[in-house]
Image 1: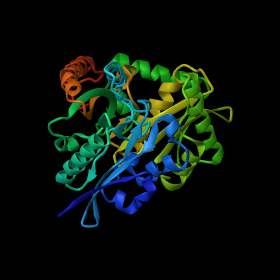
Image 2 (image 1 turned 180 degrees about the vertical axis):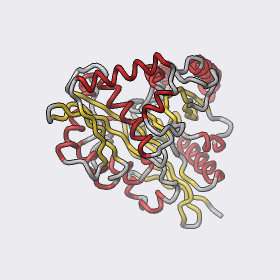
Image 3 (image 1 turned 90 degrees about the horizontal axis):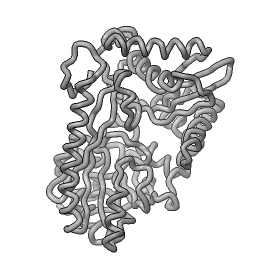
Image 4 (image 1 turned 90 degrees about the vertical axis):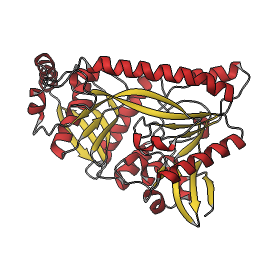
Length: 382
């Protein structure tokens, strides 16, 4: 049976039903509604380095595999940092950009990247994309933040990179106090003090889903998001229209944590809910109150998971400050095909050293985890 690779300049060129049939729907970032919404509502622009070039694999008129993919003119918004690779290519007189990236834009969230029912179809999709990229003269093909279940699809000629994020895992605690009781005394005391300070400052926290959020609340959340990016000198890629789109088409998966004081919304965090996981994405505030960030971005998320019976809370990339608050290091992975053989060979040793350093750092952090009654080398989380 013949296989055909097709490339798509818009995700809307692929029927939503066919796309969503290739994943289980547990990860909201892979939903056709989410990814197509980024394109429809002005979040992806070639001038910002994002040009959709999605891939699909067809067998006898049926789409059997697909991947969200983009031609990248820079390395912004990816969270797997390869700027040194680009500079090395330039020193050798080689063009690194455009490269071909399989990822969810602006979202360092592990989830399906090679959408297919069979591992053999994932391999076939990767092989077809690799051959097409080489034929088109692209420097590289990257698959970022894929789950371990997709690792078998990668064979020889792929470089693996690892990194660390900090996730909270539910141990079937009935409430927040029970979670605190399993922390070491000093960590428990610090969290209680942080939460008490926020309450004394007059803040009231509440969570609303997309179908419960008013236009005023959506606009406030978007303002907070833009303000945070401006504070760091970055350009906000998401638009208010995209946020409103999520509230309409993914109403129970969009979760806003809002902090109010004296009747005004003072801070907010934007999250997405998956099958068993809450994903924290963006936060912002007009108040510089101690502890407000931790309450809005972490403690309210933990309470939401406990209340809703979710197993995992992923509050975003990086941040060892999360460890004393109950989040443990989890490794993330990506795979990379570099077309230039000599360059790929040189990078192979570098990637191996990087993976070893990441594993050693994870082990070091785990030895100082905040929980009582857990082995010092636990890697499964609480």
